[in-house]
Length: 138
Image (cartoon, rainbow, N blue to C red; front, side):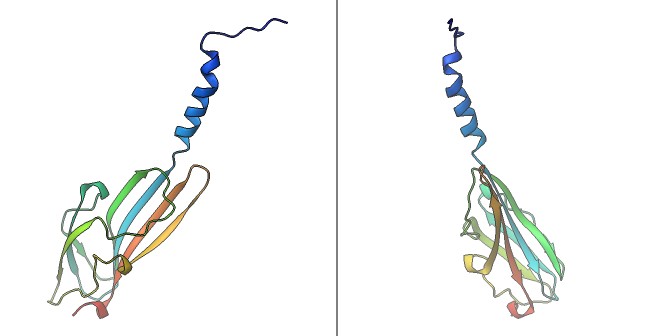
């Protein structure tokens, strides 16, 4: 019986394992939305770290609309996302016709997080929604 091993072939299993591990790193999509469920137009400017990709422009939110305020594609699968307000430094809010928003955008508890995902690769998505109504405007 003749055995023939080509140069470099003994490293092939190690290269294959490294490739599989890199391919299984996973992905996490995080999206932040604000839902204006009030009858008033509201303007917001988010000041947040650049990593989380919050929109830095003035956002004009008409009554009854959803507005995406941030979207990020993170490397690695993260099953849980528990701190949706963590990246926000401050938010300027202006309510048409006067008044102020009493619901706190900087409070993690004020955000609803809908998480989905599974699989060996660990692909997850987290949609964080801050919803306010007329009752949240003074």
